[in-house]
Image (cartoon, rainbow, N blue to C red):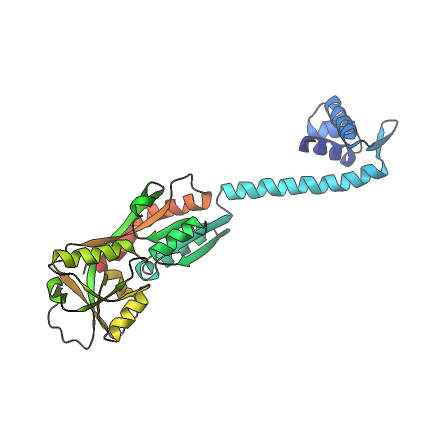
Length: 305
């Protein structure tokens, strides 16, 4: 049974005969007759009782006609829904992000996307890089604003560099510091508070390497799983922290940030997604991201000041 059979059958009912159905469908009358006959054979029932040139529905034909109308209507809805999805008018898009690193640009990006594609449902998940990896694995997000993919994931993921940010040192405001920059070597005697490696391996390893390159191994005092906790620990004067400059975006009234000397290291924020044919909502989001990338980079230049 094909939808064509149902369309021909319902047309015969609606136009009260084969001749009128043929005229309105622009289909030869024998083709319509054959389709209805095939339908009756498949169903094992008579759909019409023929009286001269008039085709009247049998009782069972009336029941089938009512259901056929529902089936055709559902088919039309399915077609329309698929076409809307192909145009990006509907669907779902999961987005992972690190709040402190993206708060300057992501809200505006999401507003513009929703204005263009209001039928797409957005699912937002704030998480550290390792948490976003797990969300990718569970199929919960389609794109992540995160650190670059690890070596074992880079073969399976595309990434686009958004911006690069320097490292800074976070000190309790109670510290009397006259210099605008802090020598990395001068942190050798400090207790260092940092993101735990499991949360963000790239940043953790970069901090360790920076310290080693400047002649010391850091005294790791606390390894925490989010930036809020890192800065809260610094506020409590339980250590100092080397963090990415976007940590400035978090509210930490009793923390002061200083650029480092030397100031050669940068850590990257990227957009990351799987290497496969993107869904329509993701494809449209990537197109918008490309449009907005120059503005995003301009907006994030404050990190270099």
